[in-house]
Image (cartoon, rainbow, N blue to C red; front, side, top):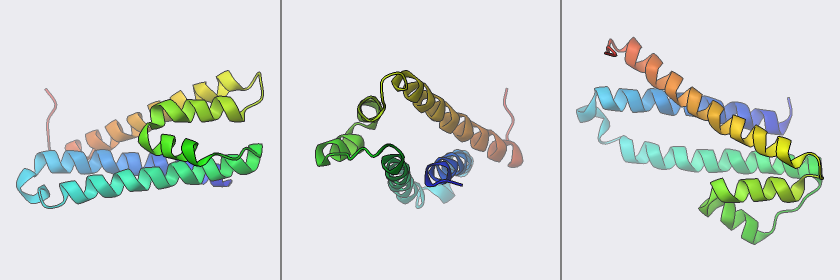
Length: 129
């Protein structure tokens, strides 16, 4: 398994865990208030780390070096700078596919988040009306 695939798999897994934790926190607010902020911060940094692991693998595949400004942009405004990176690093004819795969990855992460939330909520006995 390539570095990029491992990073994507871990991103999806962390999204699933984040959804499960959010459902648990919603169902147990008194118990979760001490864990919520540290978890959100840790989740943010884990996601950033995994994005940069993926970018490292992509850099090896496409031989494209990111500038320091691009790295700062990815941290500050990832939704804007990731597509810019993909457009700059891909040859013509592969750029639109790369943007489509990025959108599919975002959708997949959101789907994993929702699945984790629903699984934890149902496992805890919550009912959806």
